[in-house]
Length: 83
Image 1 (tube, one colour):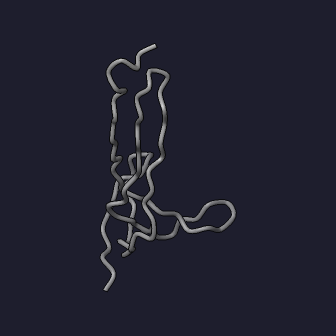
Image 2 (cartoon, rainbow, N blue to C red):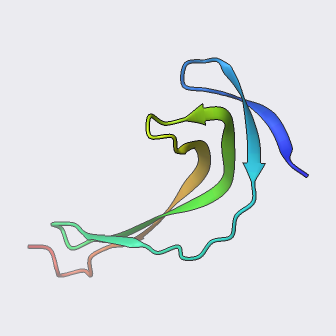
């Protein structure tokens, strides 16, 4: 059974959305080494996916709104590594 509900679009208007189930296939971290030696790891984790009824992009692809969170891990440089 589809769960229909209203969400507020970027223009402030209420639009009809349908919640779409999903399963994560892969959630990998992106890693960044900062100039001070700190390693930052980031990944996006999807909480929900909503299909926007009656909306498509100029190429005809369906429009979706995705709610997500960012997960971050910070590994500070080891003492004595500062340059």
